[in-house]
Image 1 (cartoon, one colour):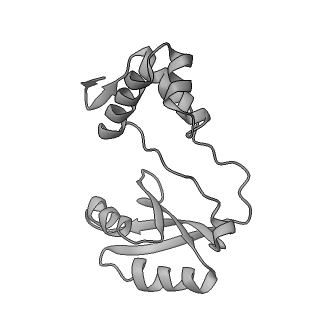
Image 2: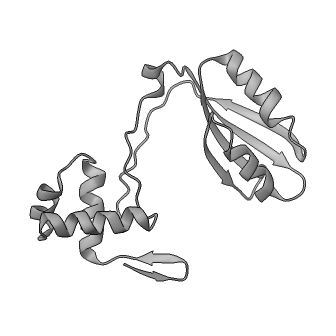
Image 3: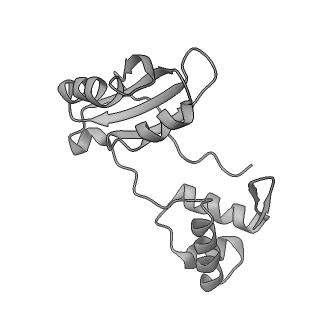
Length: 155
């Protein structure tokens, strides 16, 4: 792994390890080692470097509906002033799982997961629309999630 232009440059073996983990995040280091031609210890060391370098996160991805979070939505936010400051503030809200600064009709796109419509309304009114610098919001409530993958590979 080497840094180049703020990006991490990965060798083919590290890419293969990432692809193994994207296919099955619970795959053992020994299994990964067999697939990529390294020892279990070497895989463990490489994975730790990838985690420490912020290249990968190893987490359990849950189904929000099965955990009682019945409302998901994407909120488009229009901002005046420094969008980075508002983005940082919004990112600290516990119900927010995704914040991206954009070019286009919205300055921010914010994905939220919460228990129900009442919690969504509270979140919008008390935590987002009330922020200094937020001009307006538009909420896109998810009716049904058809596809959500995290295995786009390393290209």
